[in-house]
Structures are given as structure tokens and as C-alpha cells.
Amino acid sequence: DGGDHMKIEDAVAAARAMHEGGAHIIDIGGESTRPGAAEVHVEEEVGRVVPVIRAIREAGLEVTISVDTRKAAVACAAVEAGADWINDVSGGEFDSSMLSMAAKLMAPIVLMHMKGTPETMKSLAIYNSLLADVKDCLRKRRAAAEAAGVASWNIIMDPGIGFAKTMDHNLLLLRQCGDIVQHLAPTPVLLSASRKRFLGTILDEPDAKRRVFGNAATTAAAVAGHVDIIRVHDVREMAQTALVSDRIFRQHRPK
Image 1: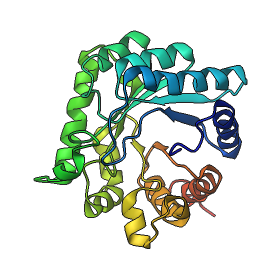
Image 2: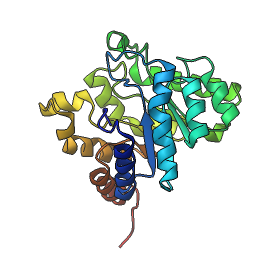
Image 3: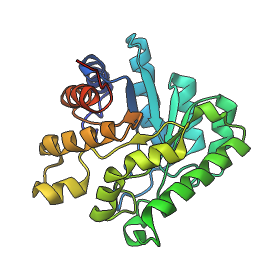
Image 4: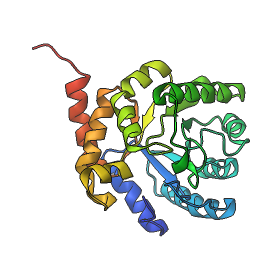
């Protein structure tokens, strides 16, 4: 959560509060992937995430844990410590061992669309056709995962809002997320727009934690587009948003 919970006890308390607030999955990462962020060495990243995962399991929280990492060694250590999923923002391209590791661990893996690395991606937000390029890339990453031995039912796709995307790109992905969901079916789709910089630009709000209503708008759009998983920060507020949006857009009940 942006480095807010570096102490293990704080991280466990935050995980418990998120779970109680309505989160079904807790995503734990030890390396920032925001634009311009520098790479964290494997040993340091393992040292950040593994103790937290172990502590959450020892605390008895019955919640799915996702490890947010681009590195196969970190993913392996995290799953051995009690994580269930792997969330790789590079789509398995940063570390050539990631897809085979996910297959070996029999762990679900989220494969996200991005170009370059967090240090370079801002300059790479150039596309012939954004939607076509994103869908084509995700299809290829899914095929690569399956070729590496990952079961098709263990693959989740993410169009990568905020990663090598301009504000207009991000808005287009939100408008067309339903098309992406249909195109990639039956593979589940995850969407993450929470607290992203483009929301701050629209809202004229530099403080990411004060973009709650902007986050709610993207959550409603994701639900309307039949996205399967939504990654958020403000769990209780977004759980309410998702619940009402689901009733409006998905549960059409006759009088």
C-alpha cells in the first residue's frame, strides 16, 4: 500500500482490516512498479514480502494472498511461505523463468500488459491501435504461459492501466473493458485503476489517498464491463461501490 505498512504487525493489521472490509484477495509486494521506480534486488524483495506472508498465515487469516512480483525466485519464496497467487506486472517477460515457475508451483498467475520497465515505460506509450495491441499482447502472453505448462484455468489477464499508457489510453481501456473481457473469455480479467496518476490529473488531486470518488467511478466502470477482479486500496468503500454497481449492471431482476 505505497510503503505504508513496512512493519510486519502493521501489515498484518492492514490485511485483517482489508479482509474484514470485503477484500477476497490481499496483494503483497516488495517492489514499487510506479513510473520511474528502480528495481529492487531479489534478496531485499524476498525479505520484504516473505515475513509478511508468513505472519498473515500465522495470524489465521483465511484469505487468498497474491504476491506482486516480476521475479521467479521471489514468487517461489512467497508461495512456499503461504501465498496463493502470483501477480506479475511484466506478464512473465521480465524474468524468463517466471512462467515455468508458476507452472511448477501450480499457482494462478496474473499476466499484465505493459511495455518496457517501470523506469522506461512512460516513454513507450505509443500504439498503432491501443485496444488491438493490448488484446493481441495478452493473447500471446496467455499462449506463452500455457506453452510453459501453466494450466489455462490458472491464468488471469490484466490490461495494465497506468503502465505505458497515457490518460486517454487509460480512459479508453476503462470504456472498453467489456470488449476486452469478451475477447479474452473464458480467461478472467483483473483491472486496477485505483489511485492512479491519471485520476489525480482529472480530479486535480495530487494526494493519491484523496481520490476515493475517482476510484469509485473506475470500480463502477469495471463492474459494468463484467471485469472479474478489481484491485483497490479503499476496500470498504469500493466493496460498497462494487456491490451496488453489480446490482445495477449485472443483476437485472424483473419486478
